[in-house]
Amino acid sequence: MSAPPARDESARPAQGLRTDRIARWPGSGGAGLVAMLELRRAVARPRLFAINTAIPLLLVAPIALGAAPPPHAAAVYAVLFALFATFGAAIPLLRDAERGWVARLARTGLGRRGHLIGRALAGAALDAVQLTPSMVLIAAAAGAWQRLPLLWLTASAALVFGNLLGIWVAALARSVAEGALFAAVSCLLLLHASGVFRTPAAGSIGAAIETLAPFRPLHNVLGAVTAHASPHAGTSPLAAGLAIASAALVLTAILAPRLAAELVRAGRSG
Amino acid sequence: MSASYRYPSRRRGLEPVDLDVFAGDLLAVIGPNGAGKSTLLRLLAGEFAPSGGQVQVFGRPAHALPPSERARLGVGVDEPAHADELAGRENAHFFARANGLRAADATARVDALFQRLGLSGDAGVPAGAWSFGMRRKLHLVETLAHAPDLVLLDEPTIGLDAGSLAGLRALLAAITRSGAAIVFATNDLHGLVPIATRIVFLHDGRKAADASPSSLLERVRGVTRFDIALDGQAPREIRFPPGATGTVRDGGCVVETAAGTELLPGVCAALVQAGARIRAIRVREPDLTDVFRELTGAELDPTGPSDESGHAGHQPASHRRAREADGRE
Image (tube, rainbow over all chains, first blue to last red; front, top):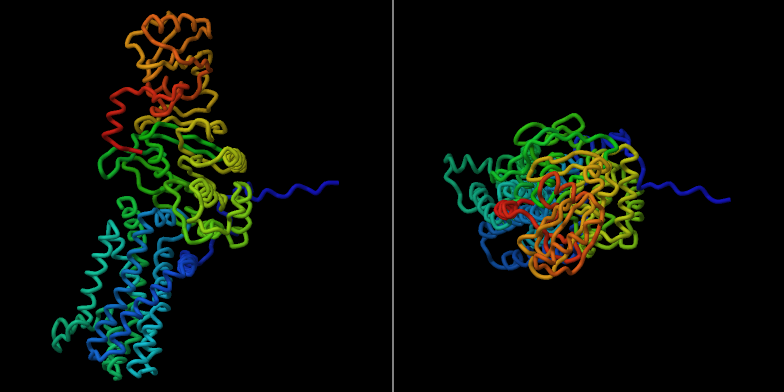
């Protein structure tokens, strides 16, 4: 007596749009799936992960351990964090677009929103982890341990914004070189608007813009940590940072189909 | 679909083409490079909207399918990009999940397809370390794992060894028997075309034929073909015997006759008389390349050897120039 033949799972009949295999990730469009994939990709490259952790630390250390004036130190840290997030999102995304990965995901059942937002959130989480030693050093050198949680949370919100900014500039770019240029220009302009490079006169247009500028909460907290002082009066930097990151997430969700289409096009022309 | 497409660069992708794909179809889209095969697949995949007409998939415009409907497509076009740092199995599992399979279903399907295509032994190896052929097979697994209702494949047999090709044939036949439709583009008549239930010839962006393989071959039934390889250049003028028609190609000629091999001596004599030196003769029944030539006047594979000489095939100079200027795939 012979055993019945094993079922050939690979030739299982297609059953159309079966309800048992859809309606997953309600509302997220697969953002969690994409985020998990990106995190696994990062973990699978331990050397790159270590480099991305060590380099910010190497840049932060001489400033944190030196005698840099707190406003200068806060400006450098803000620039470093913002560029780290924006470049870190834009350049790999453009490389993925150029090799056809973005187009492949666009042809699956993933939503465009899920793809881009999942990628941005995973990127921000990785950035936050990789910048944690730098943040610890900044807080320790300034003797402001008690502000470390606020710094970490506010920086994480800024990193979410930076990653979303990276996605936007990647969608505008047609090559990795263009992406790097756009990332640098947009990031530096927004840092400037955030009051990182100058202090606008009270009541001026610059001061009004600064209150809405996306990297202001980060700069505010970094200034408070390095000077061992309280953040500027007004809205809590963490609340402001979260509000800015949330607004950017909503905007990205709205624009996601267009952004994804541009990224696929960038891949073809790249 | 009833649509045309012109690329933003103004180069033509597809002239107006009418095509209906039905459940159970195993449809081969055949044509030389630049015929519009990939453009047709991309239109069906909804990668772009047609310039004219409409492409409907599952009753909706293909370029505006919601994610839940896109999950019913299995799209295997373009170069297979993978997450190179992750294992092949992880890649396939991700795509199965991205197309809506539950984790347990995705694992079962991926494992079964890996087994079927001979990938199980390397399933845990990062995809970046896989060979070209293995990456192509991984792409097939990723395209098919979620049991799509419409499968679109572009040159699916590139890089496959004979064993894998046999496995893929059996798999695709089983998938169409289950009610899914498969559309694949190729100019390799030996790969999957023998199992196709329907063939569409594309030439210069136009549909030249849409029929079953048997009805297409009916057009050339009774014709015998001599593929004759010559040493050196073929003579300019050859007076073939009545009842035989010849086409001179670089390095040889192709002669067709309805009289079987009866005219072969006369054909050889005509060639020798014209100054040709015959190197090899192959007598064969006509195939789809002959049907394509009869329908379009062009060679299906202008670069590939259809005779034993290994020389490039003949193609009208106007076609060559147009292709070189256009650069289409």
